Length: 100
Image (tube, rainbow, N blue to C red; front, side, top):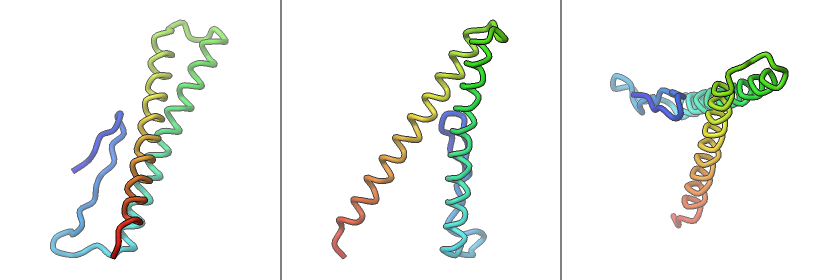
């Protein structure tokens, strides 16, 4: 199974594989890798947008549509990552308020 967010796909690993449980360390490493990959993809879209904008300003690119589409993709990707961050922080705060 995989999730798709603005063209970014990250595989979600199951809790157990073939009856074997994944250790907390493996789960943490997997989550860290997925998070790193998602952040790298956001960074790549920002860099691509910046490069296309600069090339358009220098007159190297004639297609304004390409530049605007790249800028919107970068904007949407960044906004999505900020919203996901907010939701994660809200969930963490909610868990911390729970009484055990």
